[in-house]
Image (cartoon, rainbow, N blue to C red; front, side, top):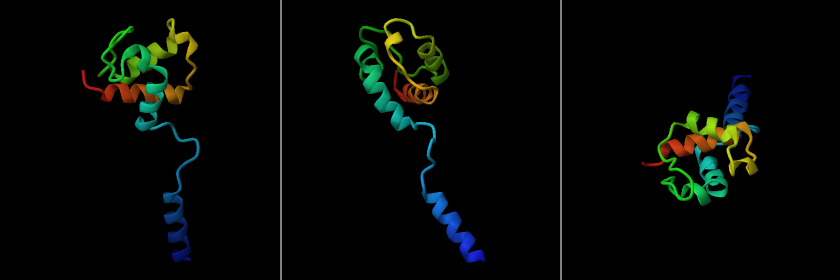
Length: 92
């Protein structure tokens, strides 16, 4: 019985959780797709303000407010959080 339980735990630990929030890696892809054109590839700013190094919660709050032209972008709350986490890792 212990061997079966150990095997089940081992297998379940190696299977990715469906519905898990996007990781910082996903945040990078989402940023590139939705944000980089205006905020720059490294978040240093272009036609929109620099975002590199901003706190993730601040970024998420602004994204959720949808100021123009961001009103055309639709991200889930988990995606918005992932972008925020990614932006917070960018160097100022």
